[in-house]
Length: 142
Image 1 (cartoon, rainbow, N blue to C red):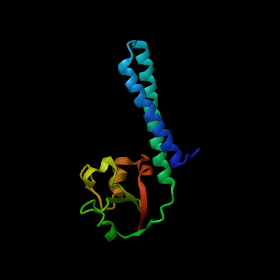
Image 2: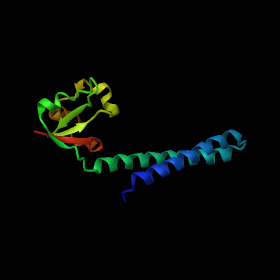
Image 3: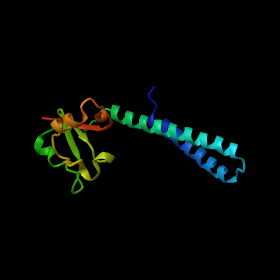
Image 4: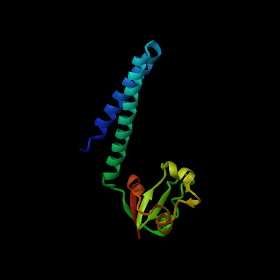
């Protein structure tokens, strides 16, 4: 079931509020067993927050991007993540936005730089992995 972004955010806010309350209670509880119970609840809350974040990412990736367009290799070369430009890479003819991806900090990834077609490099390192599913598609390389 795909939840709406608003529903997910409301639940995340509720979990954060519950967690903050539980953290405050931990400091007042003299009983180790009660503290352990609260810690288990905090752990469950963390796991649920992680799942909700994943749902938000999946929802965003499922949305049709109205700005998707055909991008030439020359245009792609402008999206290097420098001078205020986003960082894009192409793999198998699809152009992905890696601007806010932690693995692409500073628009580089293990010596590779954004603004290029990295199909061969991706195949040699990530073949069979679904990491591209987590990235926003911005267009098609032509």
